[in-house]
Image (cartoon, rainbow, N blue to C red; front, side, top):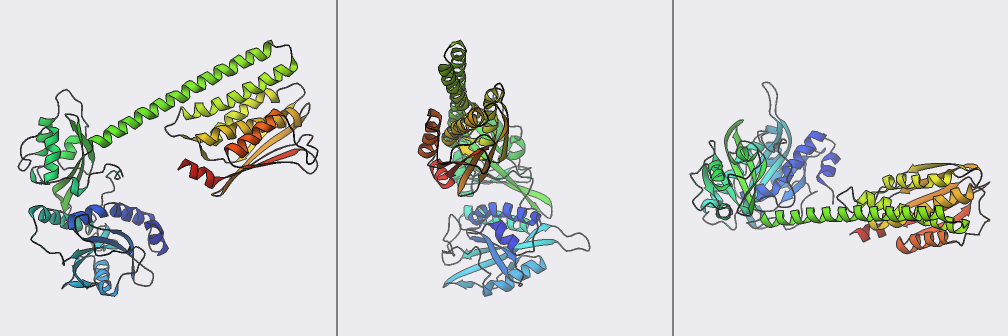
Length: 497
């Protein structure tokens, strides 16, 4: 499905500022739909003097009119004139009589989406139209909560038409734990006094320790009474609870955490009150804290594993220096290098919060392990990396780092032994595969013959067994050897999921 950005840019009439504005408004589409008990659709003009739907939100507390997704559809003929008038005249246009949609009576309101108010002598900048489609088939006597919700929706629609909503200075909404209208809504007047509190909002404050009615109370005074005197709190909390800024804050007391989001209400640029959305997020915050603790524990484990591996590598190095057998010394040195390559991956994982690594950074550090080999007497090798590996999950970073360490080491140690040359590592990645080529300017291999040593067996096992990839050795035209590794990216992405 096309994204809002794709649909807007496809019309060729909008700029990045318009798209950002529409994205912010669409992000609050669900809030508007819940407050209005109606479907909310956002339209942008097309090149052929029509309009196309770029976003749609269904109400959570009422029946939707659109059972099929209409994003990407052109405006229907019965709404076109109303939508066009709202766009060209920069005013709210209500349907004169009930509009019938698939045998259901509806009421439609078209609201111009204004990004900039017009100054004296210039028209406002209208970038689209928001329509509210109310289902009249389920009409019933509205409750006080429904009346208040509708009033809040009307205030926000008026702000949409006067470039006061959305507010780009407000932080973007988090996907997890963001308060919704159904979670709890408080309406404040211009002085921060509560004029309405939904039952869910009152219950949230009751859990915090407030056992009275919220209506008629200054919300900031309620918070002051709830908060323990010794506890530090978010400095933005007083501003949020007074309804003066479109910010967010958490209120914590008695082991309960309530997330707050304030939307100041304005009319003709003047503040007239505010909406405060609240939600009990105690369990969510507890889970987030557990995740943070687990992340810290995992990072500490990677750090300790790295330290232990480095200790093992140091012991192997010491043993290699003390042995009198050249064959044993080479075996211990190779083992030390392999352990060090694995330690690099764990060191990288200990520095981040995710279990994925920037493999380019890992490989740059792995190349330094080859320095000792390259510094052997009569051998002058240069290493060059081109292209990018990108980010890989840790379970694939370790075998790939180890395999490439073997290949580069072999290229220097055998291909460039007692001579000067270059080892180039080329990485190419797309959605389908990761291809890595390791080529040297050394003596090359007899065509069709591949080494049978431990290093070659390790590389085959890692690439074919651990990464489900393929590997191929062949001699370059002229001189040198090229090893080609190909790893299917779909397999990696599926394994990560």
